[in-house]
Length: 98
Image (cartoon, rainbow, N blue to C red; front, top):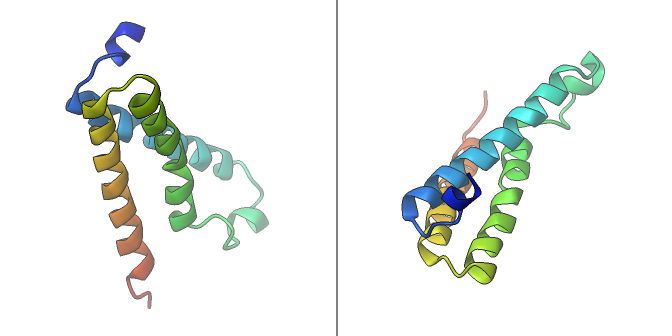
């Protein structure tokens, strides 16, 4: 399994770049679900904040694959997904709410 993660492939970068933030996002949603209603319903845990928190591991993963392993294709895949998530954040953040 570890050897599968150590390959220089754009597709591997896309998979890792999507999988890691999805796991982090799901984990935070699971934790928030069990918080009391007063905390859960406050504006502390907004969708925008959860999206930003979930892409932090992508930055660390990108650094590992680019600097330590020198896997440029995998790093490009992770970077592409990170940009797409960032654009999604901007769209959600700047949409007018009624």
